[in-house]
Length: 238
Length: 238
DNA sequence: CGCCGAATTGACACGGTTCAATTGAGGTGG
DNA sequence: CCACCTCAATTGAACCGTGTCAATTCGGCG
Image 1 (cartoon, rainbow over the protein chains, first blue to last red):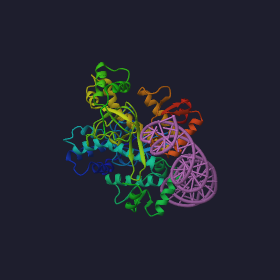
Image 2: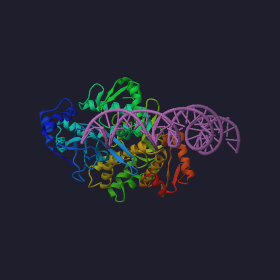
Image 3: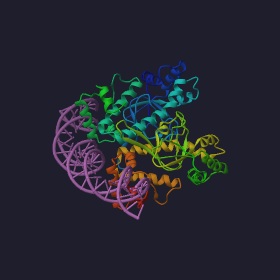
Image 4: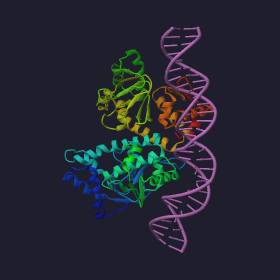
């Protein structure tokens, strides 16, 4: 169930989109992005983010909260393809690439806006260069991440997988202007991380403990701190 | 090192492409495909298939032999993203999706042809409907396969992974007109399968033995036979 | 205070890896 | 035609990374 929310809250949040657009954002683009908040909607955890209108879901941008693309197996097992953080676009290019159309579920309370205006604007690159760049690059970025995920799952140990994912999330959140210097929000349960990394919850927990014991990371109240980025990058190349 | 090869051999081989185009192939399309053999080249096992011209590799179609998209880790581990069989297109949409640009290496002696004429023809869907359909669908099919691979690696047991991959390969080869009724060529070593499925060679070997012991498959001289497709599909959903 | 989901812990079983050696099959040269 | 070579397939045994099961503790919230 989507509910409209206050303009004020969202206005503060669209800056993750501006951040993702990079340094050079024209005035037109800034106005375009700020206009997005009109379509803001919130969804509770567990909500499918790409349902309406059925059959032709509209693309959206996540302003706040986390989500994931996932597949559920008949026997209840779950594989998460990708974690989605504020600033990420979903449902791009309807009917095109399957990853963009995968079941997308919110993991926390999530605020999203309609991304259609961005798609439209992207068709005039001269007027909206940064938007066009982002829209064009998104499917490739997503696919690249999926490839990294395959390597993680296929050839990394549990320990390496966790480190590699944390480094990736750190980079992505920094690019969205969230978190800084190796400290960033991680508002998901260990079960979610386990389902992304193909591990059991118990083992996920033990790996995190090990990393804390080794003083490589620090966790608390929905945030992680990477204490020794160099050491971590040695474990799982950048 | 690519070498031109006899026209006659290739003429017999382009039918995998026609097969992939489906039932309705116009005369123009048939002529187009048959003209591809002019650019035929062979490569030995281990050859990189997307090298020339450097920086802007031309898209190609595999006429015979198998290849794979892979990534090598600094410590020698290898993860195979996808096995490529005759009729598959590689290097599509240069500069676009990263999967299409991944390192593509032949696993057997391989014959390929330049796929550029197909890309060009695909821009006139009315004249080349089947070609346009195939070219447009290929990136999505590849990505879909990559997603299935993530699920295999993340949430399937070794046994399930092997079965799932064999079923996939059976379907794909049937679509290319190779193999029939659950019997198809599998001209790769167990090490290749292991590197695709994230297993050790030894374990790969043991799983295959188990499947033979259970009379679910049969192997020999580079071919597999799926003896009980139903049972196999029960193990790893279609 | 009591509740509930999440995090944590311990014991144990098992899947999968590693190492090391052997067998088998195809190819080559003598 | 056979000896030999090489790479792939196979085997055995030991090891250990991960999963499973079942409690228990923790932390936020009504």
